[in-house]
Image (tube, rainbow, N blue to C red; front, side):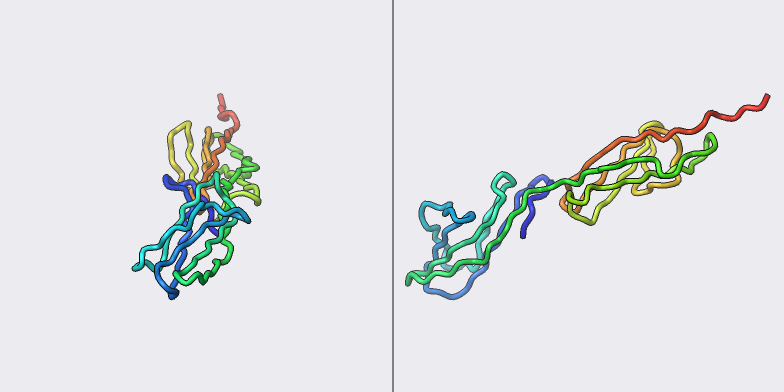
Length: 173
């Protein structure tokens, strides 16, 4: 299985390796039961592999039929190309509150929709009030407005915002 990702070149690349047969070799591309190529594609004699690029819009099950000069053919196993499924932050809440004004004791709980994204996941925490970058730190946080960005192994991400409040400053007169 190949997965389309969220990088600057997100397409899935299928590599088909082969050996033997009477040259020249030709191949056809199938998606499901539909043949995508109207005629065979000739493989240069010196080659022992070829690649085929699949965009997210064309995700599906692919196979390749390789035929040699004598008409003998072999079909690859099915290669499934899956569409990208970015992670989704399903819950972003304060997990530990700030009990005293000025403390840095808050923490954030991040839940991801388990049907989305491809692990492992990385977290980026930014306090947009004081412009501090906390990296993957989800605890020991001060009051303020935060953005939490979760990125999966396919470079797909989701970002949500949260406000951590604190009680008013205690003043004795």
